[in-house]
Image 1 (cartoon, rainbow, N blue to C red):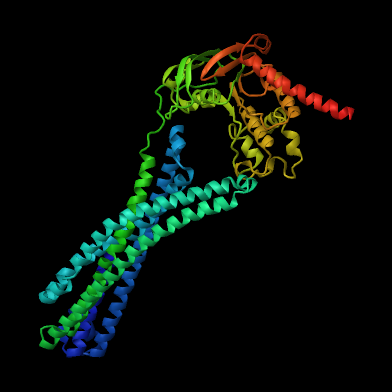
Image 2 (tube, rainbow, N blue to C red):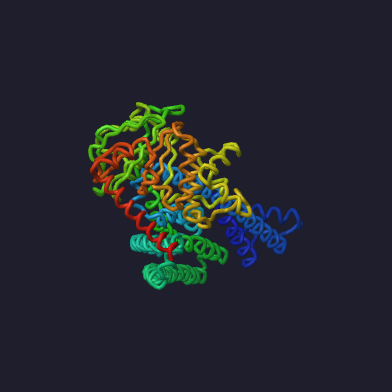
Length: 581
């Protein structure tokens, strides 16, 4: 950067000496180096030779200034992109270390914007403007001694309007920063609406909500447009005003320089230097407004990125656990509620032996899924204890806990990759034979075999090319392939038909005792063969026992059996009536 500025300043000086020598026909006004070189090459005081040598020197200096300016831009681009890459990596890693509660309150579309466009805003500012700020300051301080050396009066006139540009730029910056915050926020909302609609496009079409969603998107789009208009209006006012001031500054130099030239106190070459160097500096100073504009946007972007980086991570426990666990679970007097007060667990206690199959049933909102989330340490509990293999989960590494548990959710997430890749999420190096066995146990292999590409079939974003039942079975096979000591099925067979459910449960029953299994379900057919059934209501365990025991005693489980039995009886009667007909 420094060498490029030095050569850029030196080129007009060569022009100054050349003009004075040629215009005034006086070699004493020339630079000693070029005068000596002219006399050496031509053998006399040849004005033509001096002019050619000056032109060559000017070309060389300009070329060198261009080369170093190119290197400056290249190094700035490399450095800024490297920094942006590190920032993206840090953001991605930090997001993975944040607690689940952070994502409950965050908008995924806004988070995507912070990790992409906000980082890009910071990168562009670092590449395009940080170096330019240094260049403008260096040019100004290198130019001033030269201007005052040639003519102090014109030097003062050459910089008289520059403070006005600087003050205007800072006033403009304060105004534009607020507008950038508003515009970025409205862009984040717009991005979130777009992402939400793309993700749920089938729901939108199924409920004929196209017009509603189009109007909602249009409203957010108009808000973003209006904020952007206001932003550009302020920017346009500044650019017009700064252009006028910069042009006036150059005009002052021309007029005053012309007067001094007529008086004989200034040479043509000196006037050329003043015009060249003032033009060289006035536009970077005028550009300071653009720098401050982009710095305002960069500061807003940096604040949005910093909000993520300053969000507290999940705590790191000093006691790491290693090896494969046995699968024992002990819960003692557990109390939990979400920050909003919902999803309460009250004085919950239970003990699950290694290899035991335990089912959790109860009405929606009773705390079944909440307990699973707490067991996985997605959320910290307020009171009580949860132990896995006699290890308090708050005192051991989360990664070890989650490595011991294979989870299958009701609405599983699948990557936009092949079925094979999705199955290997928990165990990438699993032998193909183990993968096939897991797919067979999940009653998935037969369905995959019908696909043209088999296990190499792409499933699309979130598994959109698969049916709901197929997605659940892929998730189940993924958990089985992981082969954890503890398997959690959170209403994970709700989308499969009864015949497929029977085959899956039969396969799991054959491997009973190899792992601890927790089953959350509403269908009694899913839980009736469990070693123990826990009935939950309002965050408490109100009944527990085997299916036979609970079905014989008065309580919520028996009422559930009667309701489902009545439904089954009604279906059988309808079928018999159809057959008789």
